[in-house]
Structures are given as C-alpha cells and as structure tokens.
Image (cartoon, rainbow, N blue to C red; front, side, top):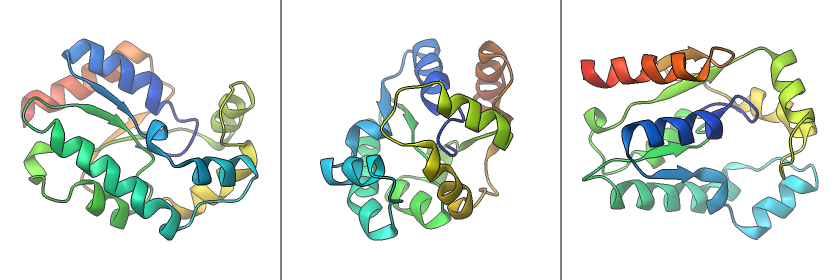
Amino acid sequence: MGVSGCGKTTLGKALATSLGLPFLEGDAFHSIANIDKMKSGIPLNDRDRAPWLLELNKQLIKTKDRGAVLACSALKESYRDILSKNIATDELLWVYLDCSLETLKHRLENRSHFMPLSLLESQLDTLEIPEKRIHLDATSELNELIQQIKSNLHDE
C-alpha cells in the first residue's frame, strides 16, 4: 500500500511470483468513471472509492484460502477497514511503501498510467500511515524488499 508511484505494482508482482500466489492489481478494478475522473485530474473521494474497495474485498475473500498479493493505495484506515472486512487480522499483512516526494514525482513523470502527477498531492493529503504494518523504504532493492516481507510472513 501507498501513494501512486511508490512501487506497489512492481513489488506486488514480484512478491506474488516469489510466493507462488495470485497478484491482484487494484487499479484493474477501478470503474471507467473513476479512471476518467483521475485522467481529468480530479481526485477520487470516499464515495468514488467505496464500490472499488468493496470489490477488492470480495477478491481478497475469494483468495482467502490460498492467499494473494494485492497492490492497492489503501490510503485511509477506513479504506483498510473495508478491504479487510470478514478477513481475520492475522490473515492480512499490510506493507506500507514509503519514499520521498522527489522520488515519487520522478517515477510518476516516467511512466504511462491514468493517474497524473497532479493528483499526487491529493493522495499525500489523504494518506493515513497505518500503525499495524511493515514500513519499507520503497527505494530499496526489489529482492531486499521481498526478503523483508517474507521474514515478516514467517514471524506471523
């Protein structure tokens, strides 16, 4: 979890492959209306996000028996509550990817994605860093990040 450009998809795909689990790309579940709104430079509000978060929760519940890796901004505690509804807390591991504003801007400027750089500030304003999570430096090497997450999985 984290704001746009922190590396959720890159890390999520690599972690899922490493663990032999399905990867769920949160962005793939956005409605066309939400994508169009973001493309237009308009930040999503809680009402826009609610159906998306509920769908992601359904996807997590579907994969609960074997597990999955989800890449999702999950910016607020209330969003994480929706995502984790009907899932035991010991069945979830929140991984927060943190990096500098300069790094985020650089990454967003150098990728093709529907969310423009202009919305980064609104995500940062919305972000509530979770208390119960692994806090990782998103500029670390990918394999190092995977090992840090795996070590926390084994501690559970």
